[in-house]
Length: 223
Image: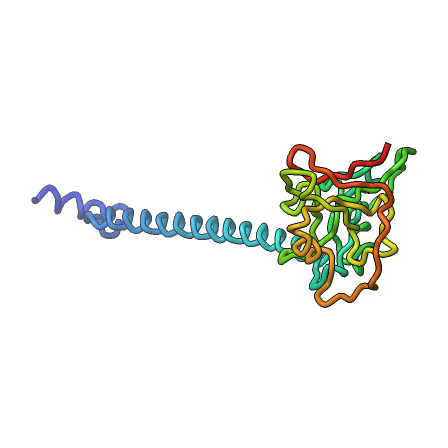
């Protein structure tokens, strides 16, 4: 005890020491607490940054999804547009096209092809089985030949129809599809607007006939 008092007195006399009691450990603990706060602050900042990054990503995706190119309320508002600068050689498949609102065609083309490029010199064709229809998700491309409306068991199940709502005047070969007669109403709901009135006439499909091939209604061209 006397030795401790002597050392304390020497410290105060020679060096002007402050409190040399074990409270210094508390000071260290205080520093550790501060360090803990700093770590928490860093974690909070990192978490905030992560949250901001996620929000930015989500906002970016929302912005991309909110273009309005395929907004629709009626089938007649939808059309098919190539989803690349040049389209494809030959007849397109569903994956080569986009369903687009008729008032957004030029805007969509600018978005899909912001920098025009040379296109190959090749013949292009129409695919009558591809239609643009208005769904709950907007204008969409549908391949009629792969739809439920084209399923069949025998040739007697199938009939020829135009891929346009009103058939008269739209009965060229490049407009014809083969549909199961039992699903004509369902098919027409995809290409016609409600209460559409068409001319009372009989379309002329020439010598083309509908048949059933591998469970799908198809058009058999005359030899």
